[in-house]
Image (tube, rainbow, N blue to C red; front, side, top):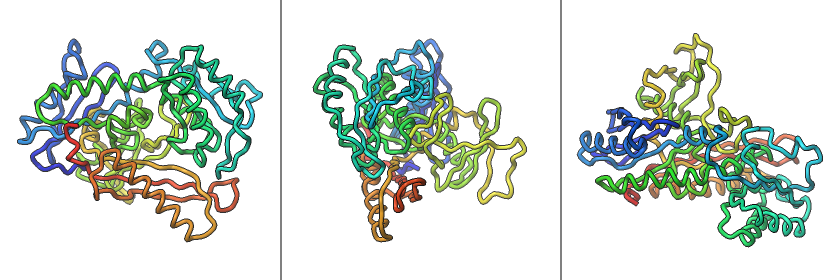
Length: 428
């Protein structure tokens, strides 16, 4: 929970396709903000209204505004007529797929956003061993053809780039030289497992870049016109937040934020740090968990996408209609507040966070400890870049599991780090 002083309120905003909602959190007090009239500029109006509520509720006014972009991002991807830039997808694998079905993404929504595809020979295995040298001639032909298409958003995924991103970086550098100003998303920035999930992640990331920049520009212009030094934050799929500068270059990490925020918002309203939350999705009950004030998250299949992504989001499982408190290791709650209020509260109280998911090879317990410490240090550096105050970070989760069907000693390590907001960033 943000620790910026009792005199400062925090604002959470969730941006739905046709209307924005907000809530002001001041200590234990939650003040939902009525959405402005649809005729007005919706996002700008509701932010301005929320700041006005915060100024009246707290002596220090508002310290930060955290925006949940996820519903708008999903709606934009789903609508075929949405203004989404064409994306070029580049696979770096030992050889091209011989079956057309394998050359496509199994998720129609993802494939629909890909204007052109290329395959370049190359790639590594999970441990970073080169499977085949990068095909320089194929890369040169790709760059020549791409330059003539007019496409400026490129998604690159290489086999094994989680362990060794060299081929991805070489391809990205060549494309930038051939197409100056190209916006490139590379799978090695996100970790995770599975070529399909990693490709879907960077394609969606590329498709959302232009929209994310426009929305964040609107938010920043709005805050610049309002009184006080207001810090803009953007909610992440893991229920934490990042700085706008980070989200501009990795917009896919904002995907799926709403569910995690709803869980954390429900827990906050109930005054609990650990609980199970029963929500409703399309008329059916689902359940999620909050532990130590953070939503339980994993890489998952977002609703409406059709394939897993490698960025984490809330774990929601089916819950029988007769699920009531009792028999669980934590309290079970049914929030009465509307979902948009829960999401706004969750955004307002969110913390800077980071997530790391990668594969390593170990031969001893001492080496495992070294791998863990290294991963924790890198995840801590990431959360500092996301806006955490120095000295406030903590490892919220670390897990190491053996990777099946791999050489003995191959492990998958996940690290989640959270921190407290850095108040010196306000107004920047």
